[in-house]
Image (cartoon, rainbow, N blue to C red):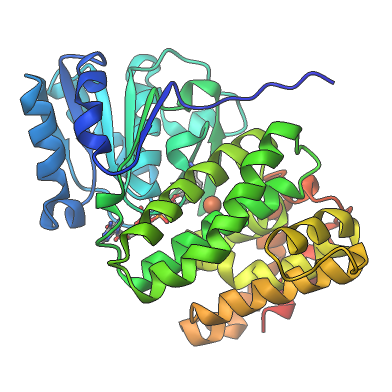
Amino acid sequence: MAREFIVPGEIISGSGALDMAEGALKLLGKKALIVTDKVMIDLGNCAKVEKALTNQGIEYSIYSDICGEPTDTMIEKGLQIYKDENCDFLVALGGGSPIDSMKAIGSLVVNGGSISDYMGKVIDVKMPPMAAIPTTAGTGSEATQFTIITDTKKDIKMLLKGKVLMPDLAIIDPQFTMTAPPKITAATGLDALCHCVEAYTSRKAQILSDTFAVSAVKRIFKYLPVAYKDGKNEEARVQMSVAALEAGIAFNNASVTIIHGMSRPIGALFHVAHGLSNAMLLKECLTFALPGAYDRFGALGRDIGVADATDSDQEAAEKFLKAVEALVNELDTPTLEQFGINKEEFFNVIDKMAHDAMDSGSPQNTMRDVTEEEVKEIYRKLW
Ligand SMILES: NC(=O)c1ccc[n+]([C@@H]2O[C@H](COP(=O)([O-])OP(=O)(O)OC[C@H]3O[C@@H](n4cnc5c(N)ncnc54)[C@H](O)[C@@H]3O)[C@@H](O)[C@H]2O)c1
Ligand SMILES: [Fe+2]
């Protein structure tokens, strides 16, 4: 069966990537809207991007009000600034939140309306050029055709998609991830792990996505603990920013599965950061998924070296799951309870969360049939 495989227009990666990308930025337009957050301004990261644009005689305005994960109202404000300032292209600097916001702003520039209008539809409107500079290793949003925006009226995280959302330019410069504190390194790194494991064990996996997924899984097991414990380790940061990109490419072309499907409702209702809610779900979701794909999980166990040819697929898969659990613990991932969520409040919304999770379509990509009742059961097992 023929399959499509989509990647960003151009990827510039490695130390010095921003310097090398200046010429490519110049080709995108005359005036950029930089979409970012206050942390990037305070750390001086935004100033580095401003300098790169100035070097090329590109004008810019800055929208730095992305705080937390993006909402429809943040997008409307950014859109207004883009129009008022007569910008003609977009640059996002930050984690997944500013990058997703950039995509949502871009999709409204020409066609207008509200971002919620695109829920459940494929976005195929004309977009201004976009460059993404990730500062977490991480969401892989720099290499995906997705954006996740919270609908504040309905309390749901909308997963919006369309090929036009794929950035034209991805600048993967590890200098920007060096400043990420351990908690963010852990949560975003485990988000990337979910992307590649889910992509590899998705019903929509394809040969090319497998290549990127396996490479990312191996890199993450080797380098995420190092980046977590020693944030200044440049080699670990470089390897993790490549892994996040690979994982993004993998799931962009193979979809995510049950972890992401169940994670978004927790994020929307309890304001748990995306990577963290994924991390909290990893063990129980993979325990559920394992019997549907012992061969695939087993292959990952052998790839990371915790199993070998003498193990059956099931044994190797179970060893892989144990290694995932050990990694989640090594990175000090809190439980829902330790995070401070009230058990009764959580149980009161399990029906809504299970419904929203199934409605997103992601759990159904798992290589084991899954029902809404089983999703509810997994939510209960988190306690
Ligand atoms: N579009 C996609 O394909 C996709 C995939 C996965 C997740 N997401 C979305 O991405 C968002 C989460 O993105 P994220 O996990 O990267 O976090 P984020 O962008 O929300 O950032 C989290 C925090 O880390 C800070 N931070 C980021 N980089 C830093 C750095 N280098 N140094 C110091 N602080 C830094 C930010 O300022 C922020 O306070 C969620 O909304 C999630 O749903 C999108
Ligand atoms: Fe994710």
